[in-house]
Image 1 (tube, helix red, strand yellow):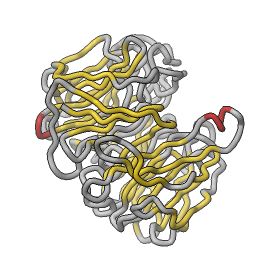
Image 2 (cartoon, rainbow, N blue to C red):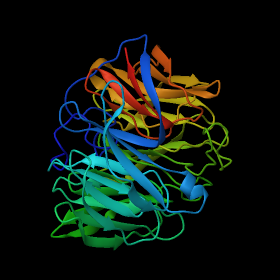
Image 3 (cartoon, one colour):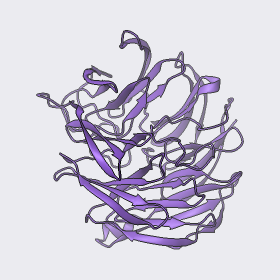
Image 4 (cartoon, rainbow, N blue to C red):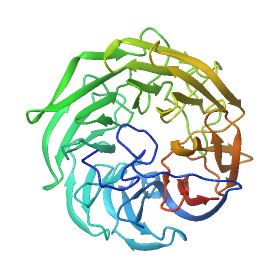
Amino acid sequence: MTGYFDSPWPGEDGTPDRGQAPRIGAAALTGPLRNTARTTLMSTMTVLGRPGAVYLLTHDVLRANLGLPTRAQVERIDPETLAPIERSPRLPGGPMWPGGIAVHANGDLYVVYGRWAHRLDHRCRVKAALHLPVNQPYNSFVILDCGLIVTKNLSDATPAQLTVINPDTLRIVATLDCPEASIARLSATGDTVYVVGVRSIFRYHWTAGALVRDRDWQHDYVGDTRQSYGWDVVLALGQAWFMDNGRHRYRTSMIGRGVSPTANRLIRVALDDSGDHAAIEISGLPGGSITNPPLVDAARGIVIAFDSANRFLRAWRFDRAARALTPLWERAGFGCASHMVLLSASGQIVTNDYRRGGEEVVLLDIETGAEQGRTRIGGITQGVVFPSIGWSNDVYWCSMRRVARVFG
């Protein structure tokens, strides 16, 4: 984690292994939950910089509907009222897809949105810009321990291309074509990058100034099934964890929006041996689908997965020695779809439940699934993007056209 700024949540999912937990410090929420919310353009994520600094990434969508290039914007917001304190100019992006923002170890903000990368100072002023090589949207990035930035275009038909960027010069230092297309966002540990392709998971090591594919580590998770592609991978407990059946027809929610007739699955691949793998159905219901990663509590050995299309959430206990999952609890009729937040010190998870045509943020006990708090943040869309913790035992929740601060 030496490539990221020393804050509790400097990048999406907190850490590049997608732990969805505070990088440093402890946080807890107590019910009943309350919230402060505001309407935004398309909110993607919040990250934390210097003490008290909260940055929000948004982008426009109407221009895409009109066939025009889209733009992103970064705001430093008040940590309690959410009001903008400082704003970047509109950042050119081009083709639309929710991008990403992170605070680098050097203290600057980096944004990848559309076909552009930007470097901003802590006051959201642009320092440099880079036009990326493939005419497709790039879906965010990871920062390696060595400080280099690795990004990837979003592609479901042609091979995806990894691009390595020097953070000081904001210039490309390497590119490499993947063996297949890839929709999912990248994950990383140290200087190793993991890619979930449309049918396989594989990885690359940054060594001697180049990305080198690990040809001894790859797993074809689709095989002869009718499953569709996987989404973002979590690296925890010595395993790679992700879910498949990622193709869907999301509009205002994920409910009933699955495309494949099959149930979606939780997939495990051992990091030390890709031949050691398993796949387990989550709800067992047809038309299962998701947009995001599972959640793993490494301290407790608990894995959380879900089926957004069928409104189903399930937890297992993972025996690391036996590499086996044992069912722990489940919640049917629970409309979760977003990335989550793990409050490991208190044994809680923060997730969403889309019901009665609106978004609610819910606090659950990770051991039992028992509900500990709930608050309705407004808006008609189900969140499928990125929350973060805040500075004062609170959580920021992005739900497309809303951003909310949730607190006890």
